[in-house]
Image 1: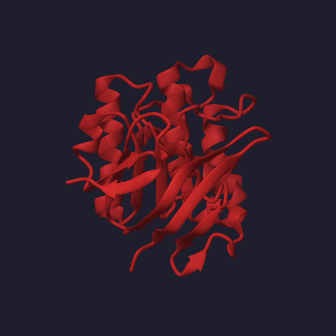
Image 2 (image 1 turned 90 degrees about the vertical axis):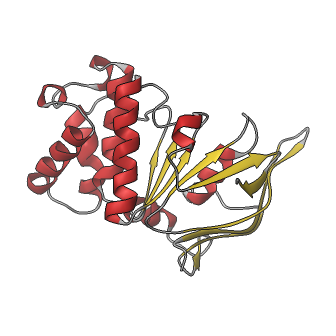
Length: 223
């Protein structure tokens, strides 16, 4: 059974002056234990699909289903807190929290006490290729690549069932980018997570188990 599915999903952005259908009748089922790459030109609807899968918005038509439940019926705050994590291209780190505190944050939201959250967060930071030196640094004291890896560590800290990544290696050098892709693949294949990556990088897409291409709001299985 799929863990996450688009069921005839459409989404329309509306303003005073126009309507834009960003997603058109999209249907696809995502399984645990696999890495999916979502590719396509800018403006094709990739980020909108990611937002819908994350429960950040609801479809104009159709359903996004987590297991057997539509996101319309879910407690979407709880869903994002416990079941799904989003790795944002823009980091979205809290500027007044240290790197370690940023990674601890989703754990504490789940009710894990700081004494337990701290070593878990530290372990996750180490897993993305950083050292203890960054633990007490604030985001403004980190390079773009370091901020990206802290954002990834934070997303992974709560051990979500579904990981949604928007260009997760966009600000990393080749070596660190490869390490992050390897980490995401191991989470899917060894920890049975569902990993969905929006990417323009064909080398990342080439490592995915399934490649989906978006064109003018429509989703198609590639190859």
